[in-house]
Amino acid sequence: MKRRDFFKYFSSAAILSTLPKLSKAEKPEFNWKMVTTWPKNFPGLGTGAQFLANTIQKLSGGRIKVSVYGAGELVPAFEIFDAVSSGVAELGHGSAYYWKGKNDTFQFFSTVPFGMSFNEMNAWLYKGGGMKLWEKAYADFNLIPMAAGNTGVQMGGWFNKEISSLNDLKGLKMRIPGLGGEVLKRAGGTPVNLPGGELFTALKTGTIDATEWVSPYNDLAFGFHKAAKYYYYPGWHEPGTTLECFVNANKFSELPDDLKQIVTGAAKIANMDMLCEFISKNNDALEILQKKHNVDIRQYPDEVLKELYKISKDVVKELSLKDDFAKEVYNSYSSFQQKTNNWNEISIKSYLNI
Image 1: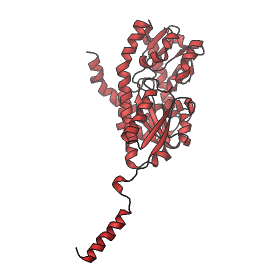
Image 2: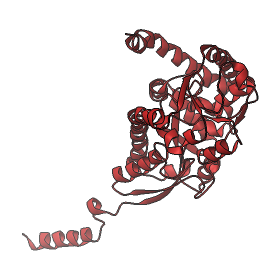
Image 3: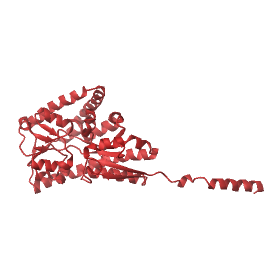
Image 4: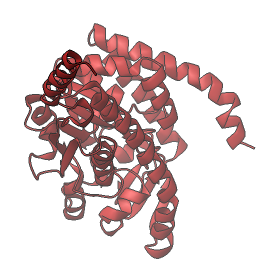
């Protein structure tokens, strides 16, 4: 090596040695908080929030650490929307119908009485334009929504009296959120919106006469069989309830692109995982309720379901007339449901009727 090249080589090496080594450069880490509407680690819902947090942390290699707070630990259950919107926490875990006071249209992104099932909801959100509408709905609140779970078809609820006709719903004080609550109201009942952690005491003490929650897996964990006699099905009010994770938009924008993809991908993983958990555990819990606790499980009379169906159609249609955005969401939702109904007739329904 010539003398000139020798000094040129080592001069360059000296300069390079002072530059950061990109392959080993320290990557930024983010410490996030997730607030939820569920009791901490409550089966299915609370554990679903924790599963999402763990998945984000694992997929990011620890670059995003998420601390999960149950309802009331950091903020009350029904204040998590505002908490994440304002930046008190980076993530929230709940369901969109809890925030109908912000905008009635949000309820479409949770569940609609006699509406789409869990697989149809996922198809509408991911492939039918529903997700873009949901993002548009939350944009004014500095939030980015993501589907992060689904309960599947729910049960109709726990009652301390028989439901033989629509008249039995009149004067009934029942915990039932969202559009299902409005249907009950028009049927003569009084809907009450309470977080899950308060339901057993309210039902046991007579503060409410009835409650719906989710399905056997969750309901057994809350011990509703100790507070009510009759367990009705089907869950006409929630045929496939989407659970959500919403992210503070400012905090999300601070993430590098790979971590943004990890957060959105983790939400999709959690969405499927929760649904599978409910489907796998509901029947085991149902058998315990029947055989061990002798719960009286009954089907709603056809007459009651037909009347509730008629009321539901009116309620949902009226919601669509509130403003242009509500109409846009309603048209998207209802047209997609009709399309999937046509296919379901010769696929799922025909198969189940064999």
